[in-house]
Amino acid sequence: MRRQGLFAALALTGCTETNEYGAGATSLRVTLVAPDGGLGSEDDPLPFSSDWMTLGVEVESLGGPIDGAITLRVLPVGRTSPAITAVEMVAGRTVPATELRFRRAFGEVRVVASDDGYVPGDPREAACGDGDIRDDDGDGAAGYPDDPGCFMYDDTTEEPGTGAAGASEPLLFANPRVRDVQQALAGSSQPVRVQLDGRLPDEDAPGGVLLVTHRATDGFYFTDVAEPDLGWQSAFAFNFSTPRLMRGSCLRVLTAGVEEFYGFTELGSPAWQCVGADGASGVCCRGDAAYDEKGCIEPCGAALPAPVEIDAAMLSDDGEMEAWESALVVVRDLTVAARFDACDVDGDGGIDFGDCDAGESSFECDLDRDGAFDPDAGDRLACTEEACCSNRCGDQPDCSVLESLLDRDQWTATVVDGSRTAEIAIVSSAACPNFDPREHAGRTLGSITGNLRELSFGRPKWILSPRDTDDMPDCP
Image 1 (cartoon, rainbow, N blue to C red):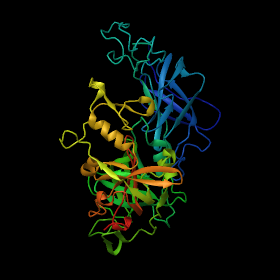
Image 2: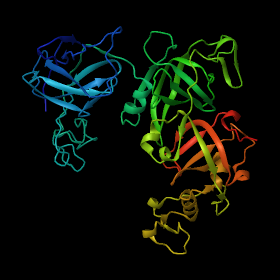
Image 3: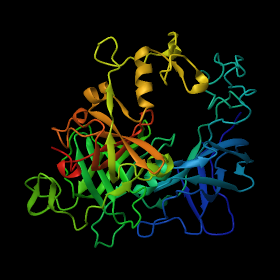
Image 4: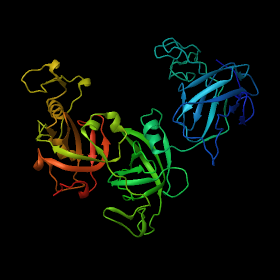
């Protein structure tokens, strides 16, 4: 493709900001036309961009013209539409002015322009496409990713760009809140590390009141209690070990990577600072008598949220349940599974689910146990007899897989709401070591309170983790 150059900015009507990095033939100048709220500042940042926003951008090459496509990105964090935005330059300028669409930006970001030699097209016909074996530019390599001139598989030319690049003045956005993480950032294909800002309830400062509701052996659950509606306001920070935090601790700041673990949003590898850490204990509690076995004696000025009641109708609606992931919830009148089926047929200590994709013969699973394999009646193929047993038990509300209890301390219970019956899994040994669900098979318990987790392939997929004996009134 190309030539030489440097990007720059566009003179549109309105306020513009310009920043030039490294004058010369291998640099570009990028100019922004400020959105209605300006470019943001530390004292008055733009709101977190959960929705798409449009920004006027002009790029100009300095020291030499570029005729062809250049790419625009929002860095270090932000998603453009399309994901890789390519715009044309004519005689060293973007003509007409480019409108860049992006979202999910926070903190300080810049629009970065670069001459990567990328001219997108139909990947079935592109020179860099998967099926292309021609060496169009004669450099001894063909197609993406082998040819260094191929930026992506839909690049229509194998010729590299000049490498010219430039960045705009910064845009300053507010950091996301917990709701933004759960609704806008979780599940994104773009890895991102976020910063959540915290404060005390009576402070006039950015961020939410990030209150720890449960300290687990592998991390902690917390909720932004500053919001009147607690839906989408909770999250779990995965720490690999028991953190030096307590129930009732408040976070001043938390940075972590947003990750999805089989449908469950986790804030991985977290680093945090807390409010009112006691110097001797370092457990983030206030007051002289900092904490006891239940948590902080004097929480950080905010009351722990009341648990949200989950019924059978909610358990049957994954969309509604997502709003309460990691939150403190309570389930009432739940009935322990009537039986615990052992599915470890060969006695090797685990359930072999097999791998049918690897060529293992499929096992005809008679889920309704009527003596015949009938797909029209709901029967289906499984990879192994043990997988069939686990699937069959998982599909029956009164059944819990014994190995799930023995290996993962997980058992199931049902909740009935009129004609609707739904299942939920319970992990209870940390809260009540003396409770053996097999001794309570078929019994209806008054209630269990705890934090809510999700396991996308689980049967059932929603898991309740009580914290202590107070969360399990039926604990012996």
